[in-house]
Image (tube, rainbow, N blue to C red):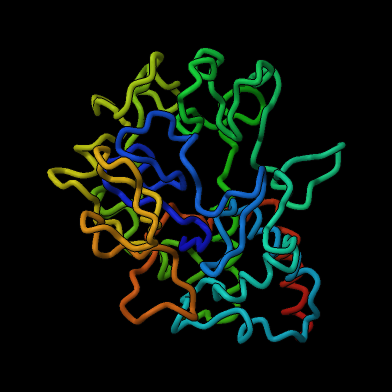
Length: 343
């Protein structure tokens, strides 16, 4: 989906490979490993010369939705937001930066609310399909974001919540949809209105969807933890915690994703600045350059239009999304249709 604020760690068999957490090879608690430029407190990312740090996709989704709903039908979104030669069917990075800063900027930081109801009212980033902390499944403080961990898993203290399943109990069981999908769907819908000959209406037919899931050793799938039942997708992580997965079921481990290689050729921008790929070295590299052991295709931060080169790697594809026009995007779509019919 080419999410520009992902800033993923490289794939070098370390815990949290390919995730937004940058861990050393000997790390245990993936969730405790740092995210890129998340150093200004909870729900906050710093803005530096490298750009906006990691922010969740519901922040960018809210910024796009707010701006789209605020502009007039005579605004030239197509030329201002898109440049197929540099950004394909995605909004140009400098433009998305502008929108995120406009709605969530606070000095040299981006600050945002969680995508929930606050005092029974939608927050500034409200995303209904997040399904956070529903009762009674999360009554013991055991859930981690949209991930529903058992109390036993939560009490273990070192298990990354992302290994727990999404909401799988109650009326909303199975209804979670990642905000990456909503963001990709919205971007593709708008780009299809602007460039129907280049940006197909369905994600799998669009440039971003080409080659999706064709090769597990080139995918962005991450190495999983051992689960209490490796055959069930809604199972919980094993207690005591074990990583990596033994690959005797449906969850990926090192062999499935890496084969005989020490790194995975999943073309995308990666941050190598914080990843110590050698646990014998006391301190990780901090010069914002790839190490000799790092994949040669991994830049140190996600390129923008201003610093991208012709040979900059394309961001790896994610799961199909255009089939899911999320409730948060419906108002935007309806507003867009109104503009189209008025032209």
